[in-house]
Length: 428
Image 1 (cartoon, rainbow, N blue to C red):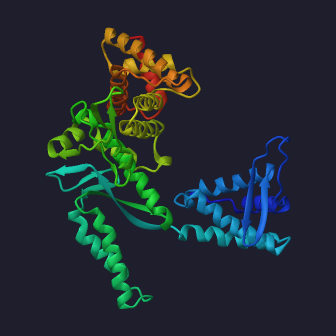
Image 2: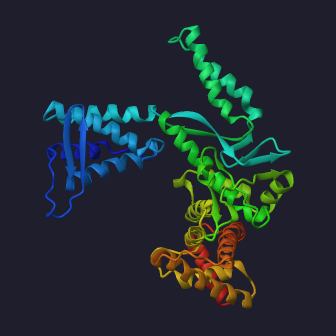
């Protein structure tokens, strides 16, 4: 483990203390100066210019250290500002005072991290003949199968608590039971996280949401076109509950348009086996289970593409769906430093087909579709032809799965491996 350089932290803290400014408003005609205004324990000050740069450097040194990887940057900042305000009150603190204060601060941070289980309901997911699915770190199971254990865990937390009498404990249990009752008749996702308690829900939700996005990627593969299958964390579906009724201007009812997506995502043993055998469900789940810093470059691209494809599947508007699918392709197949259109179309063509004529067709289609993407982003195009939307969706999902094939087959670890493979294919 790389230990943090405390002397460097002391030097930075000393610089910050020596250059503190009282809050002031910058005149509008002056050049904009990034400034952080701070009020702590009755003390107000601001950080700007080099001082703000040093402050951000210190936060990054701590947050990027392996010892503090599970502590959120927000908590590191909050705790550091507390010790900074203490040092300000001392007035001209010695290096030893700064060191001891920093030691106390650094020793406190890891103790804020504990292990938690986060359980969240998933709307519209139904397991048919399946008791549990494990995708990465996330276990998915019907609520009825975990209800007894959940109640047992609640009781084990409340019963030994010496701060409440029996009546108060009964009230706490009643309130907790009412809350978990909302999980009834739903499929639930459970994940273990290491986090601060206040951040455990967010961290758990992020992991569960990444698995939901992965399952959304498979909707076109498992369900018929136009089936409007959807799923998501419980409580997210209010935006799909909109209804509109249109009337002819000359009078009379014409049609009812229902925008809500209510069809269930039904997973049975046959579909699950197909996802595991043909669609890399376990491989992709393993990638999502890794800490971001532990993922290879190509794994980072895959996890990002899953998020874009998954959110595209849930979008109501075709132009937004099209844009997100195209971004997923960019994540998988391009570098930010290069011109995008031609390399994207070329790599897509070689990944998706072994046939020369089909590659030429894919190359042309992707170049044309990327032109539409640019019109959406820069010219406000809204209308998207359905066949174009279907093609970009197919291309993004197919590239995702084929790259998984090739990672195992050709031992792709970095994006350069993919680029080199395409270049070699061009000259075969």
